[in-house]
Length: 356
Image (cartoon, rainbow, N blue to C red; front, side, top):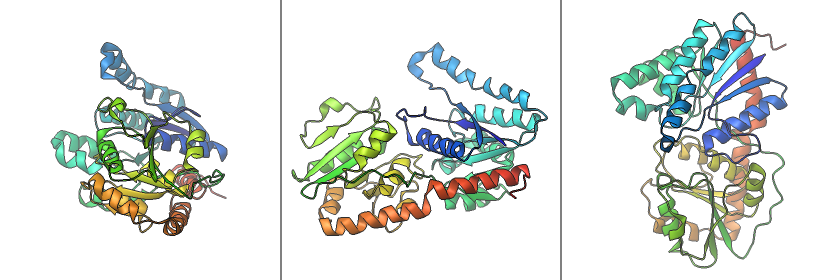
């Protein structure tokens, strides 16, 4: 069995630019651990500032599908596609069209939380293309159980969607070195206004020196780190997966006041909870679904003062109970060692390979 994996994919061992990249990297690495032959086709980085070079990077997406020609007539080859819904939707549709021509089955893996947003707000042309993408799939997986209903009832696609959550590695967690005298608050991911960086900074104005905020990740152009003058805020830079795990072993809270329209099952949120960080997050995307009763979900327009108020209610003994509950929840519901074998079994059903 050979899997051709298309989408945003972080380089192995390198910092991911976002949760989508990080999630695909983990899935591919686990598939390979299970001795599944995976060939990856990562989306190029497209930067509008590059001008014509940026356009060439976009155009290159239309050439990648022609690699499928060498698999014509080969058995047990499957495409796992993780498409985006904005400007990269058309190249994804072209990929599916070429796959159909080559008679290669396709699993369309619907990630991110913006599918319905694009479907309901971007006009009939976008609706037609999104329906075409899902209708041409041999199988659809979704990272939120709500999409199972929405794809059928809202989009009118008469196809069974299968729940496939965002995952994290739940073994080999780092030795915890958390302070019992001060609380460390963590945010890692894209540092941008849509992820609520302004709320995080405002929150620290309402917390005393017993609390320290650590930031890690790629800084978007809409935020200038130089404006931060609070000595209780530290930027750790871009961290590799191993560095990130080490830092999470020192942290108490993960605060995530995101307003991002495409928020799905956040990779950062899931990883932090697995490592015992107590989550406080906005009711945006699928945050509430991920957190369940294992943290605090605030209104998506909650202020920094409101986040600070909730944090101050959590004393160390309560934090320890909440930490254990959050970690156990992720081990049960988002465990890569449990879910990837299910994905392999799904691949085999699509390809009609005997599991015995």
